[in-house]
Image (tube, rainbow, N blue to C red; front, side, top):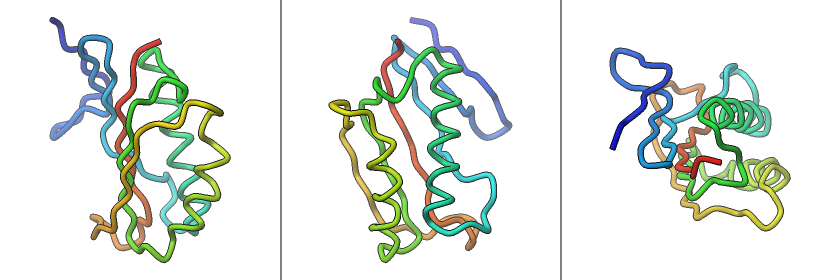
Amino acid sequence: MSIQRLRIEKRYSEIVIHNGTVHLAGQLADDYDGDIREQTRQTLANIDRYLAEAGSDKTKILSVTIYLKDMADYAGLNEVYDAWVAEGAAPARACVEAKLYDPRVLVEMMVVAAQA
């Protein structure tokens, strides 16, 4: 039972793979100045990129936990998220309001996926 860690930082790894399951650290937008739609697009693009690096893709996502700075952004998040989710492959999902580490961050997502 090996554990593979990719993109290792001091406090965390961006990607951890164990027993064919991919765990992504909380993913954010690259530019915190965008609105909820833009931050969601960037966050999902980062998820796509890291899943590909781990040998997976969005059709293999098992669960996603979404942290929103403000639930007033729920509709804008869902507008982008719903267009991104693969048809017939919607993962288990939770969405909660949370105080995030930087006041400009509007959304953060954690993903668990199967490897391809």
